[in-house]
Image (cartoon, rainbow, N blue to C red; front, side):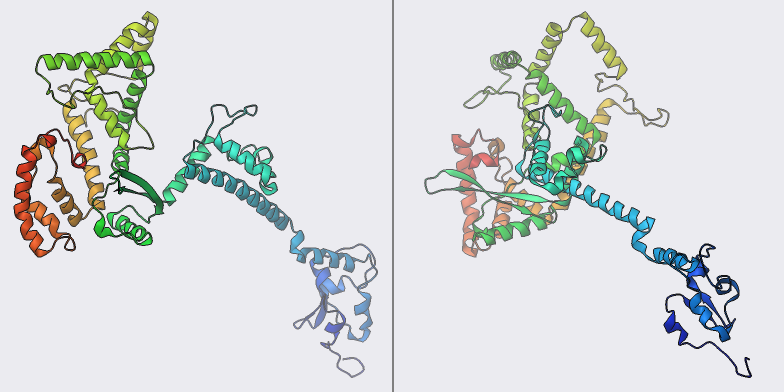
Amino acid sequence: MIANQRRKFHKSRFADFPTWLEYSIEKDALFCLYCYLFELNNGDQTGGECFVKMGFSYWKERSRVGKHVGGPNSSHNEAQRSCEALMNQNKHIETILSKHSREVQMEYRTCLKSSIDCVKYLLRQGLAFRGHDESEDSNNRGNFLELLHFLVDHNDDIKVVALKNAPRSLKLTSSDIQKDIARVVASETEQMAVVLRYVDKNGLVIERLIGVEHVTSTTSLSLKEMIDKVFSRHGLSLSRLRGQGYDEATLVAVAKKHSKIASFFTLVAIVVNIVGASAKRCDILQDKQATLILNSLQNDKTLHGRGLNQPISLKRVGDTRWGSHYDTLISVMKMFSSIIELLEIIVDDGSNSDQKVQISLFCEKHEVEVPKMDGIFKARGKSRRKAHEMTNLHYFQVDLFYSVIDQQLQELNDRFNEVNIELLLCVACLSPCELFSTFDKQKLVNLAEFYPKDFSGIELMELDDQLESYIVDMRISTNFKELKGIGELA
């Protein structure tokens, strides 16, 4: 009460000082937001303590509210500048660090994307990644680094973050990084190459690659759907398709998941490389094999005839052609005794006493031994007390060979349903091996029933008699006695 008049704060005062003036209903007093947050004691400031702790409520002297601001260097203005700096988030340390972090992330992504682009290009073209000499002074550092240098020279955005300008530990050019990127690319993409084989008007067999198609999975249903789309796109008819073939990549890949089988393939590759390391060794191997065949023919231990006992060579394994694994194993089996003799010659001729001592020490160190099949298998890495006693033959036949067969059968069962399997069994009846020993007339009739558009009811009735004549003619003819598979019937 002032002069019998009740004085109070009026909200119109907020318009005079909208940024800092605050009113407390409980205390019925005014406060300064800036000075409350950043209380300072420097410069000229009217009623500083009042506007911070107790609050200003002397309504008779309202002009003191304006005087609180003071001069340019007053405590109030200093507090105002501090408060504005606090409210400006763009200048906060966290914001600056976050902005710097985002810039580093963008630079890293640009560098990573350039490495990914190089890997994807080399994978599409089927080119090697690394070079023999990847040092800074090398004229050819390999396809990957040379391609990355090309990108750097032609793109300024990549140039500022890659190779020399990248952090020492984040260049993303090491062989491990290349392999990781390649694995990720391979895991995300399933592709199927479609190749057509046909006979032209002149009777010549022609093969043409018509495309590489993306498939969601490698199941038989997914592959069939993709083949349907490819045929439809090119205006081809499935009714005129007379056969399909797939490579052995899946089965070999499944087999290689078994650690022992993987080491077996590695050992085979090493043997092939040693035996075929020079022309001299290849000639010795051929001479040994020719002598072996000649002795077998003289002792009537080997069949003779047209096309038999032809010279063979030891075939190398190709990582990109999985069918070569089968060819390599077949050639090793046929030339096994000759290979053993050649390896003995290599040991005798190329090893002196020091080398023999080193080899013996190496075998003892790595516990390399040639097991006897009737001996007791010694499990490594397991307690022998808990290990089940078995012979080496049982281990290699049951635990190793049979387990891989089970894995491959599981893979085949996942890919082929009962109808597919029935078709394969019916087709197998056409095999010319051992004078068509697997021939089954009823299964071939069943096979024809799977193609109602190609065989009418009358033709199916005629097929029964035709197959009787067919098998008699095939077994009599000398032209088909030496065939080893359905593929040789073409």
